[in-house]
Image (cartoon, rainbow, N blue to C red; front, top):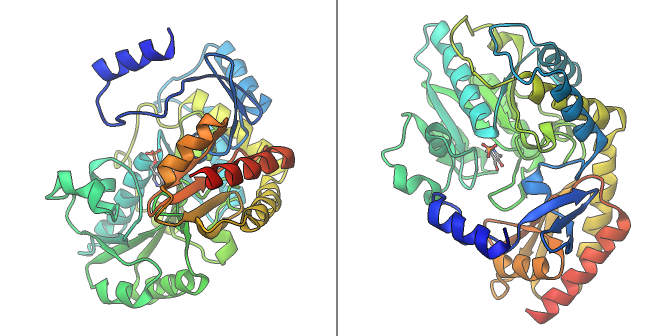
Length: 398
Ligand SMILES: Cc1ncc(COP(=O)(O)O)c(C=O)c1O
């Protein structure tokens, strides 16, 4: 099939949620390079929306998939013990605050589970606390509950009245607004340590510390959504480590499987002990293949200190971007290898990313007219230099 034939099938039969997609279909990848059907090469600086941390065809991913597939056991269900699931849970507990882990298939599902866990924690105590406060411009997923937690009218409007009840949003980085929203029915505060989709906006260090203090004073649970910021991307295994703030519950996905779908809910024993048999579950979540791949990539990234890699490369790339002289760049911000280039109104991020695609570079966008970069962590300085050069040319042409 050529690209036009794929487009025709897609527009005739696929649910129209993605509209007119970027005009390319990638068919092969190696390292940090993607190839389209005609063999044209593209340098990737978006990693499938902050997913493919080890790039393409990395042995830690590919060999783990092949080896597990060759056993013939991809999935057995959670009725039976799953060895890589147990090992992956232990690895995550060893390297984070968590005592217990549950595996889901996606970030949204992990956030759903995290909210259930928070509510169950208070239900078990006979408490009436059920409300969950999140932030404006946040993004927590596309399920009915995670849409209600996502502080953006664009995502919420078609689904009002929102389900479940008790989910509200307040301005991000505004501790007074959060304090004012808390009441005796508040169960949890759900935040991204750095908002990704919302515009690549890091939390103020004082803000997260004040949120933790507020939760401790009021007996509220703190949930960090590290679906986008987790797994070494921002320069530490999980972003919250750099803030010195520990949540009660945390969610992870995206980079956790480096392209293989898997999510996780991580929790302290205090919270996790509220869960009883039958409270939560999943057919596919935590299956053998997903956990075998995730175990392989997590071991590889931890053993090879990919947090430090992301920090060093992120500083390099951000330095280069900050040196670009263009009145179309208003700000360059981010942490590690999650970087936002805030553009002037006159330069639309979507149009810029399409122009870059035509020049052989894959970059993303985020809300608020931001060009978003989340490169595979295996990207080289040479590849980053080439991107910055292309960006300068593209900006001059826009
Ligand atoms: C912070 C955050 N939470 C949750 C999600 C939803 O994850 P998924 O698309 O895997 O359901 C995303 C996806 O972009 C995200 O960035």
